[in-house]
Picture 1: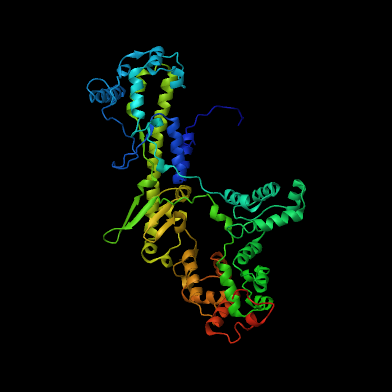
Picture 2: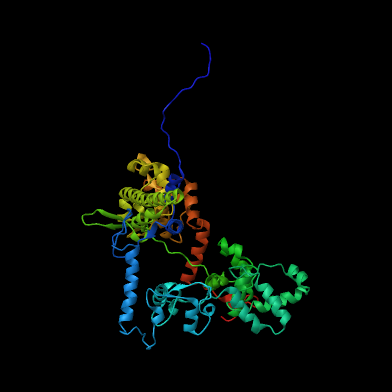
Length: 554
């Protein structure tokens, strides 16, 4: 058989990722804030899109026609009737002060020269944005003036200016330190050096600067800069200009007159405190269990990050996308949160009005493209809302026991289970559940919270979710006794008795993720607490008699 080229016509179906389709997919994973920003950008680009801010109207994603019986001509008639009504209140065409408003008569055209004579000033001084060579329509000018006047004052943009809505700028850490520098230093050079050091403060209030480098750059002695730092460390709040955590805590204890040799030794061995090695700390500080616990209580009252009090960052509140409530009959009422859904309308009336006067093909093409994009956006938002509702409904159906009885009844769930149940792709469910939140009677949970791995059960029983197993581990550790601290192996045996087949390394991983110390560290801490509650006969002996470890101010 000879080989020869030939043409073959075939018909196939394939999915083409158009820009509109890609944006529609991207809308699924946008958060509430990101979606609001995207819609604002679309409204700025598309003149046919506008917000539906009617509070009393039911929420709808469908494209609606704004037909209130007012076209462009009727809106103009309304403005003229409003102006004539204002003039009719005085009866003679005069304003409230009895002055004539003959130059504001609707329909008359006033030149720049006559208006300059009326105002007794040049037109450029009155209207600096408009040159005096142009003519003005008095009726439109009067409408603008009357619409821009508020309750006894004039505001720009037609919106009233409310002084109560103006807030002072927040006090920053740099401003707070700068005020104290003025009163702490007399010499101008010292103030400049102190201001340079203040510029090297991080958001926590720690000094992140190389003293030798600053001394070389400013041409001063490093010892002089260290003396200035000592003065700066007396600023409020206590703990500023520290180089590390130990120095920050020492500054605060010194301000309270609580920095004695024992506390100094404790601050020099914070790594032992992190390991809860109280036995070594007692030897180094030469104190008893009671004194050591008192010292720990004092440290807990300190602020390791004194500069964060001046942080200007504002935490955004979480707006749940779905609301779930118990309905009569034991069922669940699942609905979308209207506050988390944008309200967008397509102004078809405006499109019909503009399309009549559009002459060039470019104008008609632009209007058609705007209408197509506006309709696509409303359909995409509607599809996004329906998809979120479908996924949330299936999650509630799968995790109904969790909503009723708590985290111990949380079931293992993955994206494929939900995707197969609602007939969608797994990637779609992943996009929908990203950064979306559900409001339940047990609090606000991210949709991803309900998806967790399953842990095998003993004797082939039903699997347990990882979240419920974490909860059981935490309950076992919280209820343990000081004389019977549970090791990871013991926790494994107890969980197997409850039907959970889990490895020891998995227990250790979950315990560390919950920031729970090991059994050795918990045993040291609880023994020290138990000895204090029982009362130690030698408690306080070294503290009150030992010269080296005497607690100042006790």
